[in-house]
Image (cartoon, rainbow, N blue to C red; front, side):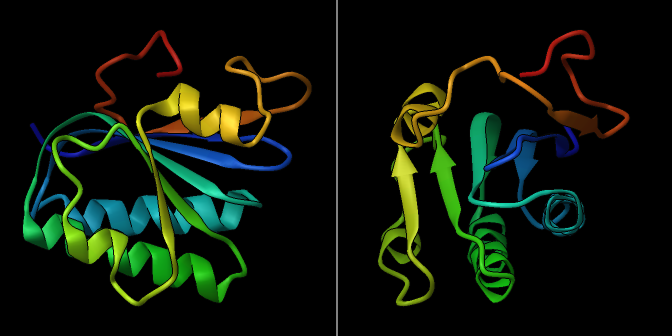
Length: 136
């Protein structure tokens, strides 16, 4: 399955949920989704990988590049629900720190954010997002 994305912009953070394969073909799509999140959001970006079926070293490299892009904009990257063990080069890359959470609920709790947004939020998704009637 081609990588799909869903982005939710809240006042103090963003959530970028991914679904499908994060590999060589998915890396450009993640790059584009990151640009969308940079333009439409603020605060930390939580990348929810719960629906990612595989992540290759090329996809993992794109996550490092995402952290760098966010850092340049004064934002941070956090990962929720990694599909398997988190490779050491992500958690100890020497690049901007990437906080890793067990799941989206834990990531939101770390920010004192409710599971359901309160107040204003906006959302966008790629055309093939597998859950069209749900946020995540």
